[in-house]
Image (tube, rainbow, N blue to C red; front, side, top):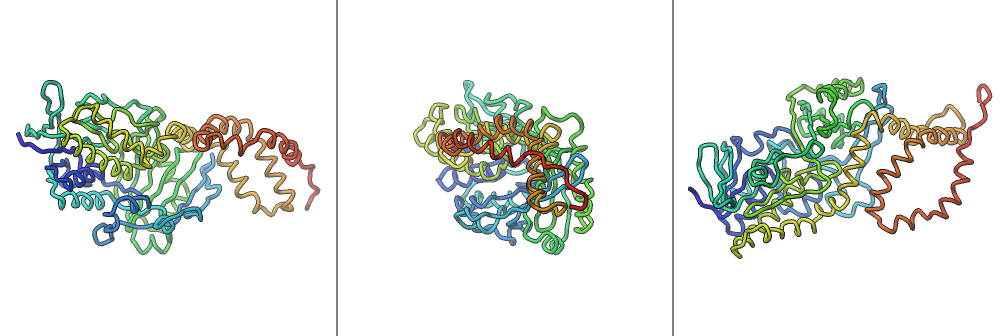
Length: 465
């Protein structure tokens, strides 16, 4: 048996960050990777948010020389697809004036392939003194008197130490430690995606500074498209309880859109890989630790409750887990009670701030872009009337605005219940009592007759008007 202070299962961003932090604090640390190198088993890409540059000094060293796929993007395009499979309109967004710091003023995300990023971040852990054991599958936990004291690999080799589980959505550490048998179907999403190769010159010339696109659709769950230096991927997902047919059918609907096919042609995109992965999507993480064990990243369900971004919370929780491990080992108390410090600390970070409204964020996302038949069938045309109708020259603009309001009024039987059930609870969670001050009932009551009058049906127009 080999003995370490800290044994980390998983060498992704969560595991590597934990290994780096533990080793820098003087702990004898080992972290395991089942592939030949970190990132080899995860060929997909990700977007790195600007706040990572504020909180992790190592991000200043992320360059194209060490991560060739990286590509910054300052724009995001939102496509709106109606029931007929037609892109009824799109909206471009960029960092707004309310953004208060760099580099968030310069880019929305820094996109990288995990096959580049994971080995890069793992090297920091190695340089700090952590031992990386690759091409090794950890299959069980080592126990003594019912308490976890280490891990066992596929060859039967035993490693004693404090255990940090950074082994992803299907976490062996979570199962064998008794923290979780498996995720419930409504807690995990299935995500299929296609990856395409594109020459860097074409991406820059045609897409400009676009980082990503979201395809809001009435015929498939919302799809995402992320651009890297030499390619892009497109994928979509939904909770396991949603699928009524092979998920690839819905992904093919997105890729098969005439608008998307046109984009493939002008980019001269070449299919490179088909990928499928699972992703935890929780209202709030739970059962994150037990005696001598802490779960981090996807293993604990830390992806953002709104859009399920997972790299940032993985690194934050990995760092905190290492800090708590150092203190627990120093005090000689690695009990479940002592490790409550882990929850107390992540809850005070921006990761914890996200989960303060986790239930409301997950609910609105589930009910809006992930409900194409129920919600997007009316949401897409309503949005296009509001955003696009004003540019219609078929009538005088004053008359056209009234027509738009009248048409929007027809969506009220579905839009108002949606607002009350999903939007209002989220606003109340975020604003608290201030919501009632902003939406004073007397003010609304006074304005309602005027709005109703504006939305009255226009009389028939005369020919040629």
